[in-house]
Length: 165
Image (cartoon, rainbow, N blue to C red; front, side, top):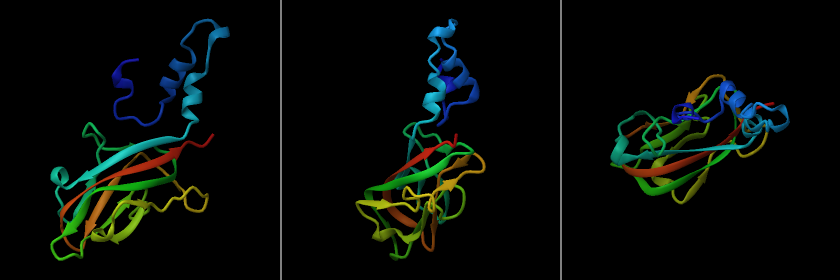
């Protein structure tokens, strides 16, 4: 399994599931590993960093530890998550807002005064059927900065998701 099969992916493709499921030619040794991994609760970590992304009023793609956009695949159900504020966010006049997005605007975190976030903050999906989000296409996690540009800030966003059976 070369790195290219996993690069930028957060789920197992059907082809990779097949390879993992059929790693052994002998049917007695087939583990169905690909299918089992596909059933697990997945977690992605996405980062916003003012020193990397800037703070202009805009929508910014969030990155993984390698600088790649964080994409959650089509069909995934976002179950829950948390925002871990690493450096306090600030805006010149104190009125800058952020919203976190997956399937739609503010669906992970509705617009909130960025200056008020600290420590850890909940996102909208909180592990209930009523709050979860089902993706209709591959979606890049983004932060929308509005009202006023940010002048500082850094956070990690952890999103837990699964695939329907």
